[in-house]
Length: 386
Image 1: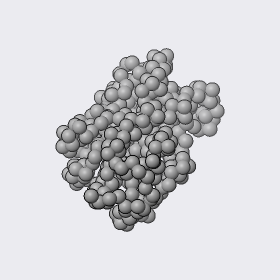
Image 2: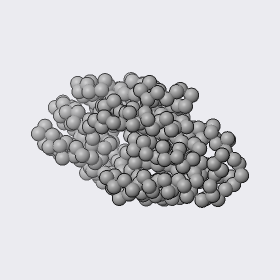
Image 3: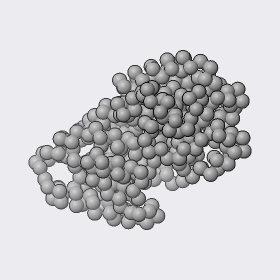
Image 4: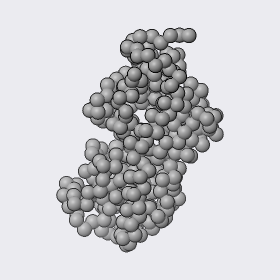
């Protein structure tokens, strides 16, 4: 029989959790699992992508302020009788897992993508997440630090937690040095420019204000450096104003939402990630797979998969001078940066593939599924209540 799995996620807008979900669907064992997705509200940029891999996708409300998704989720679970409900992001965890328990879904998974709840301005997020995890059969953390957070701050016993690092499609993001000139023309980047990319949502977490300060410092000694920012978010206007006040002009390009990151990486010489906190950002894995050198904050899951001065340059979070020095080193000693990128490429292919991540998640499912009745049952047939 094929077990029915429902992934529940807050939204399908731009974000690392959405990429993880897409990779789980693309690499799933479809002989073993029948997969569906419920998005609490809206459609977002990933809605069609999920459908394109042969997965039914349900959008349960037109806006997060209109909570029809609660009744919609309950109706969906009662009608479809899932074996596994797999929750991504805070609202899905808080809303979907208790509903799944009430609807007698036997396996309830929480996928914890970041340990940011101590810094979350929503003071209710940590107690709410802690309460919701009492309904978890198992909690998957994307890094050891995230797993430790779940155990220490949310009280989930170690036997119900696992660390599964995020994975990436290494073929999709393979290095494409032959496309460098073509992609630079597409993005209007000079052939002799040293291009530093910042990629992600324009939010407090990603700290693009620091990215701009670093750009201003680096440009004083290396005027050939060009900084590009790919992403959208609530800080967009403030960041543009800050770039103007720093006199960065055309040396910083705001690209907005980039639908296909594989179109940008061949044009890039360096990824610069300045986040205040992270789990294990997909951007890091994409750059590793694309063969792009990395300068990143020495944070959580990043430090678990990258080694400073071996396959990346890692800098203390918020250290403006340290970041500027690491970027300058990559410009002045490109052979060293390239050697690190080559080692990172070997690592991501051997340890951090999307297929490997998916098999590890399915092993968690299988840990609990054998206790279910093995006889086939049609959608809509109720599971015995005893």
